Image 1 (tube, rainbow, N blue to C red):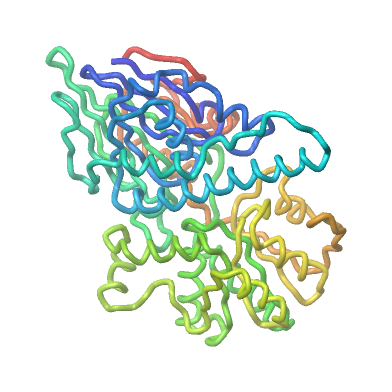
Image 2 (tube, rainbow, N blue to C red):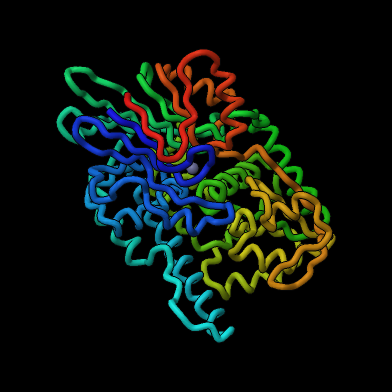
Length: 462
Ligand code: ZN
């Protein structure tokens, strides 16, 4: 058996791991590299294996850094089967179509730019097209249910376990038999932050031989969730007292739904004004929320009970979806006491930039950041206290109140990662999906035993 690494090695994006066992080649995830400088080139590079030789892709969840290179895999010859949970399959469709659309737009933008400069030559092709993304959907085969084993091939089985990270997310156990010896290899996917609303806590199987696990927050602990929610409500109420508009830059998948859930609870528990207008101003988040409503099988007990009592966990009295551009632009007339949720979470694109352009320089407005903001992004500049920022070429003074609330993470912290690993109890552990410093701290916490920090292209005999 051979395990090799083709992404998310000493970094948090581009997840892609290959297991060769029982005469088959199984890929776990095929994600996009994100962030960084030479990212386009990195994504377009060869995979490090022949796409046409892959028999199965087991997809842990629908985040772009786990599924975003699937269109490339198919275009380069993959004709095997993709196995994922029902929710992951639906969310991946949304995510991949959106990604392809953005890449086509970007390619057109560059083409226009070159034309204006009078440069003629080869037009830059998008990394992949909408058609490439659509071809991925033909490759989805069997649907995985949590805890139910799927016979991939003779002597080769896969079981998906709830990872509690986003809707439909899973850790995947592969059991492979060679020469009468069965090996259990567990891929963590992204591990969720236990105790949050909506999703169940991560639930890995025990006694595995090998674990390939994420280490995003291998070096730190999160604030308790209750304290985070209390801080969030306080920031909202303070803004309402001032009479300003509240902008919440948010990721479309999971974070937007977490925030809607908290807003609904806040209203129900009389911790927030009952009739506050809330606008979800993101077509992608609106579609994702519709998919969330279709998968009651994915939720924890408390949220599942809401569904059986016909309570919509994402609905509150003042909530409006603004899918159309004209509806979004009409929000410019808002004066105060309203909440606008818009993407992107790091303010690198999307409708949130229009709202920031309008409200950042108003003393009565607030911006509440509820997610991670990478170095160099507009969100990060504002969080770090910039007095002026540039949006659409305009210099905008930052006069609004800025709140940063860190406890909404969808990733396990160090203690939770340790608990996850203790339950899986692996003989050998490979650390992926983390910055190298976080990995080293986490490796130190595991202590003695066989811990490996693989590099890209490295393979290991199991
Ligand atoms: Zn993820």
